Amino acid sequence: MDKKDFSNYSIPSSLPKPSLGSLEKTISSISAIPVIALKILEVTQNPKSTVAQLESLIKSDTSLSTNLLRLVNSSYFGLNQSVVDIHKAIVLMGLKTVRDLALASSICPLFSGESIITNYSRINLWKHSVCVAIASRMVARRIDSSLDESLFTMGIIHDLGILLLDLHAHVWFELILTHPEYQQLGLEGVEKELLGFTHHDLIQIILKKWQFPPMVVEAVAFHLQPSRSLIFSQQTAILYLANCLANRHGLGYTPHKNVKAEEFNHVLKVLNLGIKDIHVLMDDLPGELVDGNNLLIMIEDM
Image 1 (cartoon, rainbow, N blue to C red):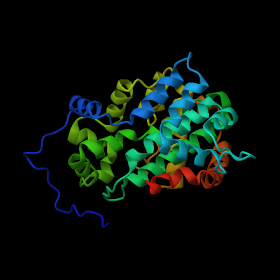
Image 2: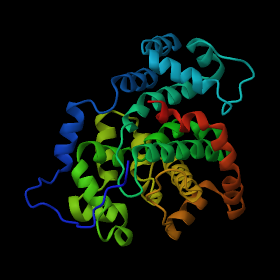
Image 3: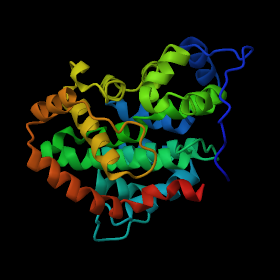
């Protein structure tokens, strides 16, 4: 499919402008996130939930079960034995890892379908999201393995606000990406000028509506401005750094290439990292992505 030509840029005067409130109502009314994903989140957030409940929930969705087992058996996780059932996957990999993979597998279908505008496509946004998820896990392991909780999920959904604009305000999304001053203003700058809000504002409201944990909401909302994160500063800093690494690698759709020195230095301080550490992480990421190839190509099988 050829890229669309928007050389004659104009905004129809009759085109209604979406508001944060109207988008929230639209997205909430049609359950934009798969029901199974919300159920997984609900079960895993409840301290009284059992492994059997998660296992039963995953098994209730054949497609989810199949994708999950394929991921579990991929080289990315390096298991020395084949896993053929969900219970064994949970035992070997732990509840949190299986939860993250199940959420990724259930959210992935949202990225399917053709939508090619300039250098954007849903497939490329998925690849970028997976790259950030893998990088987040990699950075967390280097910093403190206990910080790994939910970081993979945060990586997968960190730019979900972009996808929601594409899905539910598509004409305006096209106008944003083809704006004559897009290169100068950047994605958020054009969003602010045309809509009065950004995709970060949208996803913050939506994640709260979907009852995602506060840590996830804060990290995703401030992953480009980690200095604004006051409670979960380490997790937000890791997500920011993972996004920088993914952008530097250049896989998929990379809308945020400019790095602000003050934010980057803030992150280095929060995570107690030096420039040598950053170079090591940059060198390690390609290998991590090769191992995580099953996640990257999942969207292509939809």
